[in-house]
Image (tube, rainbow, N blue to C red; front, side):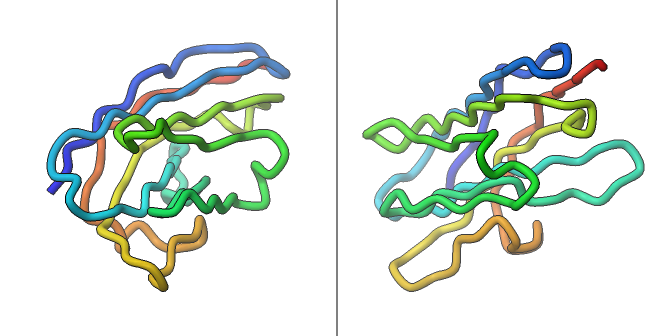
Length: 128
């Protein structure tokens, strides 16, 4: 299993940038599909971006070209760079993971029920 700890949230003005980090602790004898989700007040949790065990990335349409998901070589630190932020990006951002093997799905559109492991979340607030 794996434990996830997010950091890096904060407040920024529209047009600004933030970087979120997710540190993974635990067993790494298997690969994982890692995801970032977000949940705004009164809204459902939605997938933002994913990265699979071979480094393939997938993004939700509403963040394409603005957010970038990367991981370090050891695959223990996942980073989400948020650029050109707007007030609609205000939400709690969560890191999630599920064991992955080649051929398994790992897409931003997958629901939260697909993921076994979750971090505690980090708040992003964008003011206009």
